[in-house]
Image (cartoon, rainbow, N blue to C red; front, side):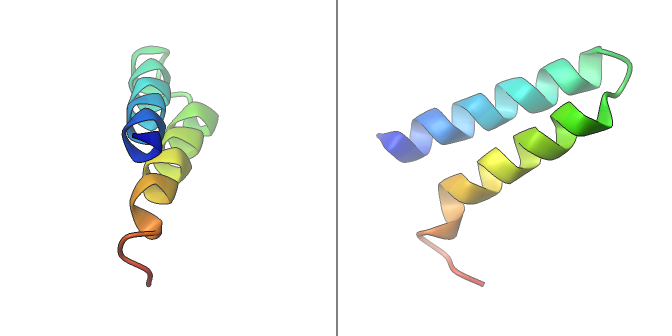
Length: 44
């Protein structure tokens, strides 16, 4: 369940960053949140 919350929060941050004239900080934060949601299942 925690994984889905992190994925949703990351997607929301990335979407807001994309709509707000491509805010790189929000896009990066969204990407990091989405990465943290799947990293524990598939480590590098």
